[in-house]
Length: 77
Image (cartoon, rainbow, N blue to C red; front, side, top):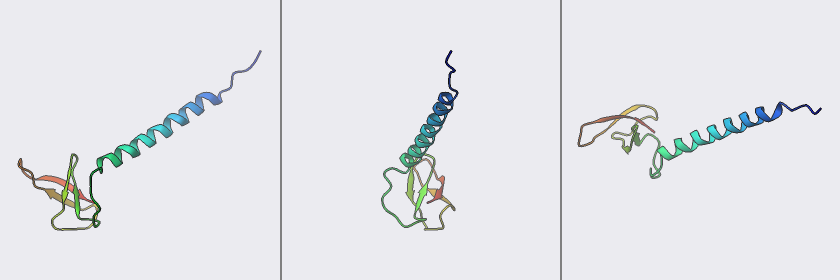
């Protein structure tokens, strides 16, 4: 009687984990899509869009994007 290997479920889990990491990386890049080349700290990223940061500041510092509905908080990148 042949023994069934336990390696297959572990390999499947590793493949699923690798796929999840890849998907998360692609989603992170998609959120930055459409951003032109820029000086670090000159773009303000909000959860849904980006704008030019005024004034330019250090990366990771808070910023505001003006919108017709009022200011939206973001982070310089």
